Length: 115
Image (cartoon, rainbow, N blue to C red):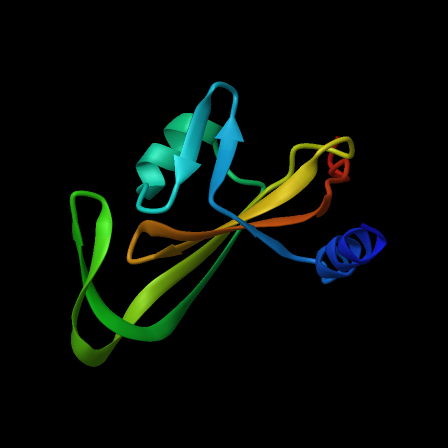
């Protein structure tokens, strides 16, 4: 039992944990959601970082990514940070080609300086 607890604590100590979804109020954001859907569910993010990445070619079929070959293509990437304040954990939502591909759980939020 102690080994299991120690393993759990060590795995969480890595800093970033991946989540399958993000709850905003009574709605969930998940893989495959579009930017517009995320804004409708969670509002505007605290911060946005934009870049590009080379990823395997895929198509979205009924909200599920399907491989479209072995070719690497350059896609736009956006990282949206949701800061829910110092009493809740922050979330970072990664978009590739306008769709959620990953949600990370970060440390506790903060009070923005402009308040």
